[in-house]
Length: 256
Length: 226
Image (tube, rainbow over all chains, first blue to last red; front, side):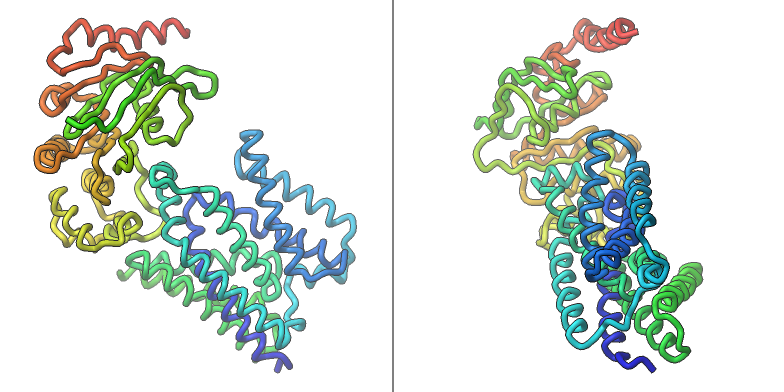
């Protein structure tokens, strides 16, 4: 059994739940400017942190936040597609990373490292999760309107940039926390899969965001318990649990 | 009648191209204005300038504190996530009684509120968007081809409701349409626009000659570009 099992379990449930909740906003194409760079930027961020010896969550947060803004700027200034802009930023950041990366550091960046989740970290993680949840909960309906039609949102005198920026900060924060549990490459799964499962069976928006949150929390709960029981890494098992829920929901949706 | 909007010498330029020049008109309370013109004539741009979401030159002066309802052209169907009609309308108004009242005005039963947007026909969706523009007690509604993709019955319904709102609540409207019968039957004033105003005034003033100028201009213009 993990020596810090309960800390890991509690943090994972909070991070998983809020990541799932944020993911419910990401299914819409209009939010993809914010969402696509996730796994692409988190890895170089984490590796940079390892090289320069600071916390991988901080590294991932900075990389996601500034990387997304850079991608967005390239897209605005050069009229390249989002995908092309991401490819450029992703390759260059990865190229620089590979120059400096040492082999033993790869694992922590890719799979995550839960050994560093102690009592105080858990409290910190729970507080960040709750804050992020409250912020996004408050602006949820605005973000939904933006993803339905920017034109409608503009005619309501909404500042689209402001809300997208708040969402970007929230998603960067959660991804940065999530990276500890599932590593940089699986972070997109932590955010995208619960919402995809919920999409399959939810009848309305209220239902949809609630299920996204619950599925995210349950996946983290199951993944952590099974990992602890079988003595395997937590991250992959969280994602596998999440995928199992997705399969069940897909089958259930056929009978709807 | 009270003047709600004054437009003087409005010009709009986007990416170095003149979209509208020298347009002036006024909107009074309870008046319906139709905007007629070929594709690319600057009709949608005009509405967006009136809403203040794009830059313009000239003067657009709304009455103080005016409330405007707007339906853009072709809002895409919501497919990415499930959302009920009620949840959609609640994005604009928290007042459920108001939502129920408006749903009846646009000719639906309350039952439709629990339906998912993705289950609606395109005509029903268009009417829900119309309902959106009526939330919040607007003094004026701006409708950009509110009937594109609707069958004739649905189309009549929307214009009849606009007319009824005008008669009963003195709500003004600016409508973009391609339909001449709408211009004649429902509007008090018509602006024929093809980058510059070709003609404007009471609908009965529109004649064959004006229309030819309005639409011929388009053909010549394209030839010129080639």
